[in-house]
Length: 155
Image (cartoon, rainbow, N blue to C red):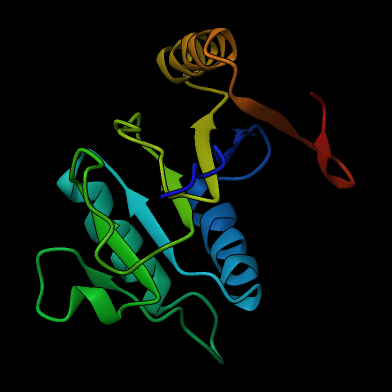
């Protein structure tokens, strides 16, 4: 078996928008790319909020998704999980880490999005520590920052 390439790891620093606003847009772009996605969270309440938000994302559309513990998880284009990262039942290429969830094993993913709230000191400190740890491990990193014009790749 050949070696698989390490995924790109993109940090999204929320400063002007909320997770509720940014996550559906990123997921929509991911699906339009032909990829599947997995969203990893730690807090059950946040998972419920994301679940509801994806069903009501736009008046004219929704983002089809399911929960990892529900039947037919492997058929979902977007899967919400609170797992530690060992499984990828829907064969997703994109992994979304929110709420300081564990990244877990990254082998097999194409891109990992780490989304954090820049107004939350603990989230900011955690993201900086993750960046340092991943950079020291030689990961392919990118840092995206919100500007008045949209997202700017700052590193």
